[in-house]
Amino acid sequence: MQSLLMRALLLPAILGAVVAQAAPAAADLDFGVSYYTKVVTDEGVTRESRYEEKWQRRAGHVWVERVLPAQVAHEKATPGQHKHFNPVRLARHVMLEGGKVKLEYIDQQARERVAVPPGEYDNVSFNGAWDANFYLVSPKSVAEMPLSSRASNVQGARWREREKNGRFQRVLWDEQRQVALVIEAGDRAGQEFQRIEVQPLAKANAVLPWTRLAGFSQREYADFLD
Image 1: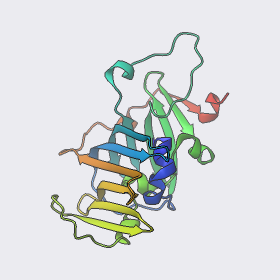
Image 2 (image 1 turned 180 degrees about the horizontal axis):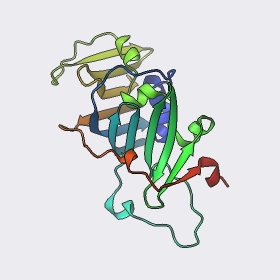
Image 3 (image 1 turned 30 degrees about the vertical axis):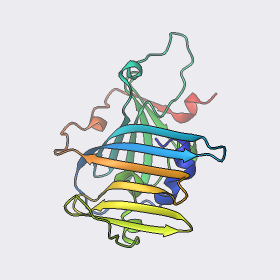
């Protein structure tokens, strides 16, 4: 899930929604993603945020889990307390079926699958773009960016970048694994900056969490609206 700050400022410039389409062949891949955002307000206040996620991608599936501090990872609701839907704390399962993107969140503790319809994507900060979830950035948009002279320390990966009206976008694209290893965006004035960094695991996990949902009850996002 993208923070409101990231969604409002930087991510749309790079990860704009695209029409869902069959993805080019890409390797099964498990990886960690770290996010860093810095914004300097007009009042001179600097706000920074950091968080991490764990990703698994396979043909037609992307599974994402936020890395939570140990002290809050297993918090349970107080008995009798109204249950609120918090997509940040739940696993996100994005599927591509028949050329259409489907989204659900998985509550492991309650053993529930919560389906989210396209009309509610904005409410969970989901852009609805398959490419932006499977590759972190659309390969088509990467191909349209000029190659950079910036050196890459990853074999088979090259930097691409563009700048317009004082704003820049940079992507370190791994051609072999078909994934963006680094995404940077910001402005030359230094008021906004974001960096997304991917750390692929050496071996993809054989355990696929979406195959272990037998017995989970099916809920709808509307069930949680007040």
